[in-house]
Image (cartoon, rainbow, N blue to C red):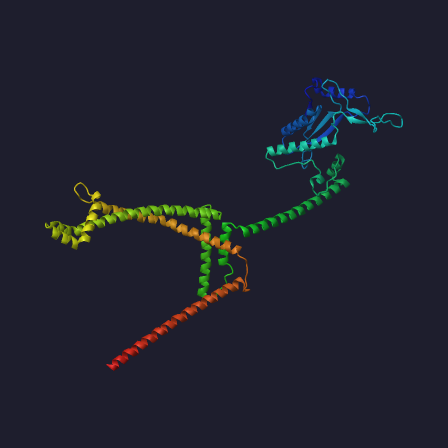
Length: 499
């Protein structure tokens, strides 16, 4: 499907021809049994397109082989399946000459000798008198650790491509044991085994692999179930602990209204039972109203609720300040009108006072009406700035301003009332949540040994006893009043008799 010779820059162009390359590789070897090339078969991914797979293979060979000085004969095969039920098997083959081609444009040595030395640094001979040595690779390309590095590099490259394409698929070059997976690996099925299986001929390897797959699937399902149970248990435990230590606002309200509505015993009296059911419905309606309010205003925590309360207080305070300002203006106008009435009422008195010509008579009249005259003069001084050029006071203007101020005050009060109602409602929600949180923190000590239902019955009985006691006290008062009336009647009769 796709072939290419990849080589370092210093390798001559003639080696880009496949036939020339491998002919030279064979001529460079002296031994008939010499190993010519490293061979790699690497699987490509069905999730990627052919072009993407070819690009991955080329980049991998260039980065891992060519950069180390290797010449690579690359061949990509599409691996289309003849059976529609079988998936495609895209893969690529890599052949790389073991003998390095040096920058001096010659084929180098594959190995070098490292002689074994004794403690004094002298070479050691064997029984035949030949020096003992170890054959060491000149390139290090046959190092097992390098093979692991190549396998890991291919895994990372493929997974990076998956992430780039936003795919959930991943591969792993490690064995089940290295991954810490407690599964049984299947046995490799050769071409002959697969061909026999396709013809319906069961093989030992095929049967064994089917049993291994079935066991692994059962093991994975069981492990997933156990893991799910562990995770669910931990999450529920964490949620219960969190709810106990730091419940949300919604949970606190739910606890509060649950406590009010649940375990309320049925009453034998029809009207009392109807009243109980009505209260239960009312509690549910209050809870629904609270939840609806919190959702509309995006309130999730107690801090959010406190912030809303502060906002409402700010709005109400601003409105109150405006109303107070209007009331001050209204009070000032009313005070001016009052002073104007004082001038009108006391004008005859002032005219009479001014009519006196003789000083003694004026002083005598002033002494008799000193308070009224002084107050008149004070009002006159304070009203003087408001008189026009003709000396008249704007009485009609003041009346109109008073009416306007009263209307504005009422409108402000009406506009402010919804905020007052909302603030009262929000404070009630906060109070209910605080009660529920306080009840959670309080230790559950019940010294009476009574259940919740019995305690509620006891509370109802105590209420009934208190109502009976109240009626007895009321009857006692009526009896005392009747006795007092009788005593008065007897006394009145005795007085009449004595007369």
